[in-house]
Structure formats: structure tokens, C-alpha cells
Length: 121
Image (cartoon, rainbow, N blue to C red; front, side):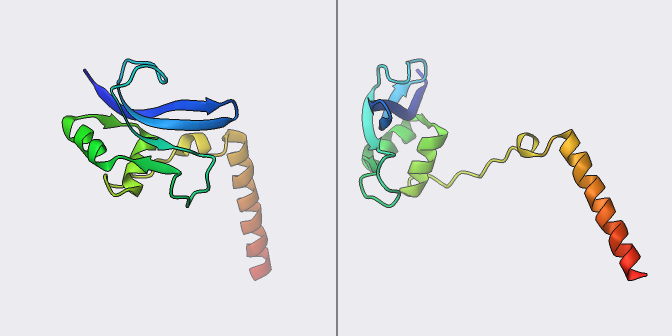
């Protein structure tokens, strides 16, 4: 039985509210869960005290038992000093300019270098 600490969505349309729950990995996002260990309200301001509410004792217990938090929950737990902060991931292939844009950029750089060389002479 693989357990996850993850978000379960609630709230009305366009007004999200999430429960932080411990659930089996195979159960649906908003389905059955073992225990509710907190809540997350993204509508509130970032510094608001009730934006993320955690039952730290129960979270620590579930982590000790082997429950794996999702990426978003890891961020919440690291902000509450329950876990080490995650390493930032980057997608250099996806965020890099495409082939034609890279060629255009390279041509512009060569042109600028040639102009700088002419001015220095």
C-alpha cells in the first residue's frame, strides 16, 4: 500500500480550496483518503496565516511511515521546516529558443561582432 501526501480539490468553480490528505497512490484525486492533515487556500494572500494549515505532528508521523509527498506538498512542508527544500528543476530543452530563433540570434551576434571589429579599426 503506497501512500502519498497530496492535494484533494474542493471549493466552487473558479474558487479552489485544497485539503492536504494522506491517500493511497491508486485512489482518485478527490476520492478516498486515509487522513486529512491540512488545507491550502490559494485565494488568500501569500503571507496570510491560514493560506497553508498543517497538522505537523501527523505529517511527521506519515513521513516516518513512508508516505511520499507530491512536489507541491514538498514546497509546503519545506516552508514549514518539516523537510529540506527541494532542488529547483529546470527544463532547458523546453524553454530554450527553437532552431530558427537560435540561428537568427547567432547571425545577429556575428553581425554585431563584425560591426564592433570595424569600429575598432
